[in-house]
Image 1 (cartoon, helix red, strand yellow):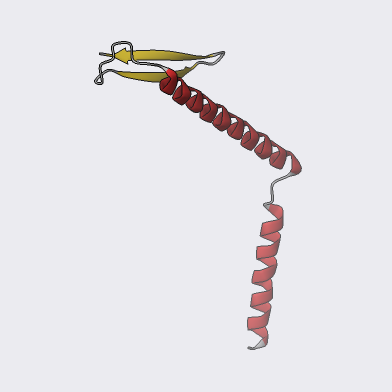
Image 2: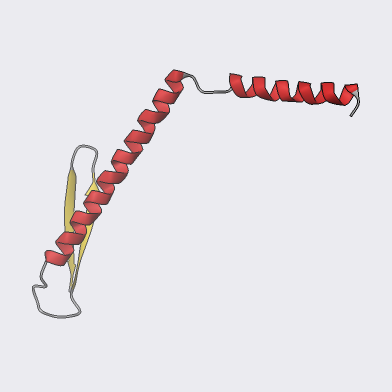
Length: 91
């Protein structure tokens, strides 16, 4: 390698390093990203908990007619303020 090649590689490395350092998120941005991740995880956990409760409710709900063709479905409906379960029974 000649002198110009070494200088070029050093410049490329320097530019890449400076670009990487300047594009790092600030402490405020990192805190905001962490808060968003926690919020998403909390919503995911709540959704999973509702699904498990609905599954338990379906297993615990006996068929009222005794007919094997009757099925019970549970639909979880989430609103902004409260959560509610809606039971739909088909015959």
